[in-house]
Amino acid sequence: MVVIALFMMWYQLIFIHLKSRRRQIKSKEEKVTERMQHLFNLTRESDAYCISELRMDRRTFGILCEMIRDTGGLKATRNMSIEEIVAMFVYVLAHHKKSRTICGLFWRSRETVSRQFNLCLLAVLKLHTILLKKPEPITEDCTDERWKCFKNCLGALDGTLIDVTPPTEQKSRYRTRKGSIATNVLGVCSPNMQFIYVLPGWEGSAHDGRVLRNAISRPNGFRVPQGCYYLVDAGYCNADGFLAPYRGQRYHLNEFNGYRPQRPDEYFNMKHSKARNIIERCFGLLKGRFHAIVEMCKESGCSWNDAEKKISCEKQWYDDWCKTYKDAKGLWDVKFPYLGDLEIVYGRDRATGNVAEDFAQAVQDMEDVQNLEEGDEGLDAM
Image (cartoon, helix red, strand yellow):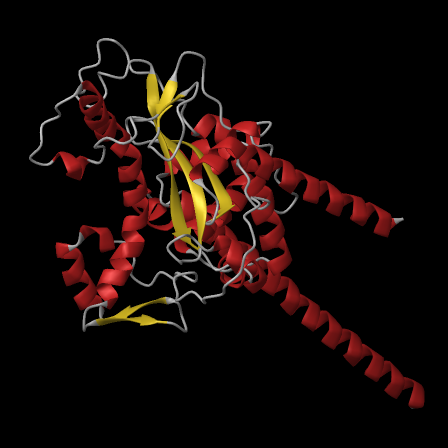
């Protein structure tokens, strides 16, 4: 009897174990099915849904996947396709979501999401020579009134200050001459308002000329083809490849309101200012959406939710506001974690530019980190 009782207990334990295993297997199968269905909806269902979720149509998404695979070097894994990795990466950028949210949407672990996001980011950075269009110089037969006087000109460049929140011990280096805490970003654009080169990361206390010298001195940094040049403002010096205005004369466009140039140098400055203003317009478009938040929060129907780092207002109020202010479109329910009041810290530290990096250096840094991590994993395996 005792033997029979023990056998029955053993049989029940085996039965319970197998039943739980079947539930786990079924749960995994359900996850795989839901994951594949979600990916299908994102990338295959319709162009409208693909644009809504990934900010591009299905054809463009397919081309991007091919470029990231063939040129960027991203490889599929045993359990993840290239399409899923790229869709996950683009979804984060499109909706500003955290890895925890992506885990729930794609049924992946946080470690998998983080690792594949970084690998995809590295692959995208390797595309900068393809995605950043090289400018074409202004020709003799140019009919654009702003540019026809500047033969062989490639565009314009300037520095802009963008508010940031650096570590407390580094804030003094980011303090600008106006007292704000910001980073100095060098931007170069073509006459048709396309960015050609961007160097972010320099501290706000650094002079524009110093940032430009650093960009030129980098191994894979900013280069100006022989015989061509860019327009720069009076904050830079005239040099090979860079054309600055006459100093000590009228220059800014508002100074020519109701005033006709009397001398050749004034006429040159007016033409120079009209053409170089293209870089100011590029920066203005980028900053417009952040300025729109500030303007909305001044109204009684809208406020800033500091806990969630986003605007707080009724959807109807927001839609009515967008009818008048087009720059506010796309800001509903979007978080902006770095849009806040900056803490004032005084100091005398000098800008170093140690954290500034361009695309080529970013790729090299990420590859170094990846190789180091793979080396550590190999040592652990031994």
